[in-house]
Amino acid sequence: MKRTMFALGTALLLSGSLAHAAALNVTIWQAIPGKSAAMMESAMAAKAIQEKLGASVMIALDNTGRLHYGVGGFENWGAWAKWVAKLQDSEDWAAWQQRAGADPAAIQEENFILNTVPGTDSPVGRDDLGSVYQVFIWNPPGTNVAPLVERALEAAAIHAKAGIAVGVSVDQHLRMHYVMNFKDWADWAKLQDNPIEEFEQFMLRYAANPVGDLVEVYTVNRLP
Image 1: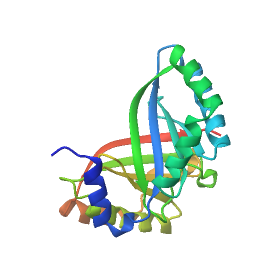
Image 2: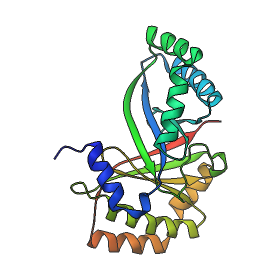
Image 3: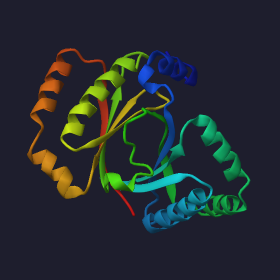
Image 4: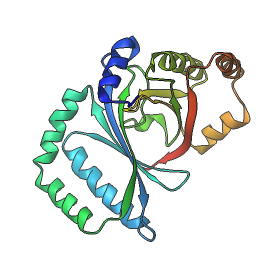
């Protein structure tokens, strides 16, 4: 069955934890060979324009060298739509698009339209969450993402007790994104060397009754 925005809306209605979810958009870019610096320069220029218009913007690089460009700060998609209208009217943004189109520095690899679960911690617009985060993308069977979100919130509560802030979101393909935030690489390394026993027990129980499959993992360094 093709996954559509209609299916996403249905899933949100079925999952109370996603009611009033915050709106977030993340695009992942791969630099054209020899243009990594130009990609970064272009992203920083876009960030300045979009933040001036009221968005929260995050730029980060993952472990494969791809650039993650996150735009958030919207309490819902209605607020996002109003911001987009301002962006489309911006002469600065039109000029940026013309420059970027005339001499592209990167190729878009992914675009995630995300609904962030209220009370969880997306790294976009949250410098206090640290400079490193790790993303685990889970795919539910069929179109029922609600059980996967419920398990994610249980896991997030365990990580919160260990001082790790977690963001939980659902994208337009009904995949769940579990984002673990770390102060720095030393903080991330600490967890690798000292696994949380309660979480390991949780994962053993999950493995006995899974409600989704882990399909992608990447580690990301957020830039100032």
